[in-house]
Length: 195
Image (cartoon, rainbow, N blue to C red; front, side, top):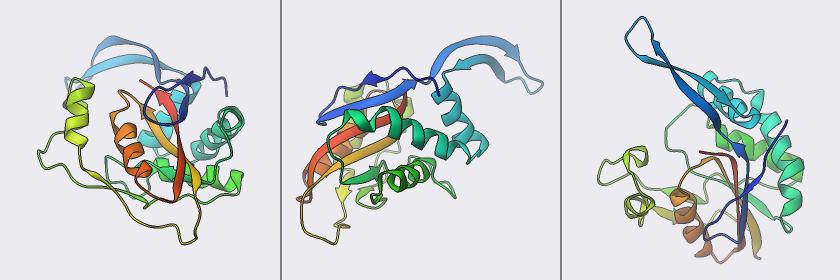
């Protein structure tokens, strides 16, 4: 997979994304139902994420996990566990959880899907409908908590994994929660793509 790594700024120790999600998009008229159509060109990582999330192409899981393992993991210090971001939408299979599990297998680690709990919005707002990072941070305030899911004693560097990095508000809120957990040392943010 051809990639274009970008460093991610935030309250984590360090972070990276594989590539930009959409390279270009142009209006291509309306379909037979009157909905707008777009000609969209995605990066290879962006297309892989799109096929996984919206076309249920589960073969993309290993492709994306391999790309993170080969191109981003070597940039990080020793990682002790993987924490996938809680999903925004309920699906029978969660793409980020699947990629985290595949990456954990490659790294001979454990992926902890339930360490971070995300409470439902009390305002009914969707982050996608909020314009600024400050609005998103306010909407997320107090919604992330920690479940003590690590059975052994010690402190580990956590790789916090998400599919798409936009403002960084969600990953920053999750990082704040992880930093409150006595078993987490450093937090290293990894996104498959950025907006």
